[in-house]
Length: 155
Image (cartoon, one colour):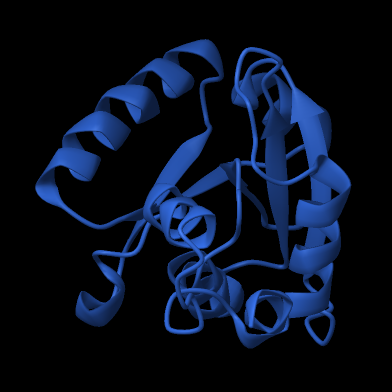
């Protein structure tokens, strides 16, 4: 059976931290689906199409990486895709506590769904999409925080 992991998020935009989690996880799985959750209550800075295009460009040479979008519960998407693993990056103790709670709830809803927590590299632990969006809005330099495929859009 194929080992499929779902890496969910808004990726608004994808950061070097997100990309690092995916790249370091590649040896563990046969397929990683980067799944952009669509939430009609949340205002994104970038369109869904733009975010999907950027992620595809970042991982264009990685055959194991797929990019999709979904609405609703992540566990329902995992079940639909026959994914047995949920991949999450954590930067801090607060992230761990949050992710632990969500992992337990997800496993209650979909028994057998295992959450894999990947620690961020220390130099990437302060990078978040929220902070990157603020830098972009303020016309700051984001090259240190986003993959080069995205940074070229903000010179």
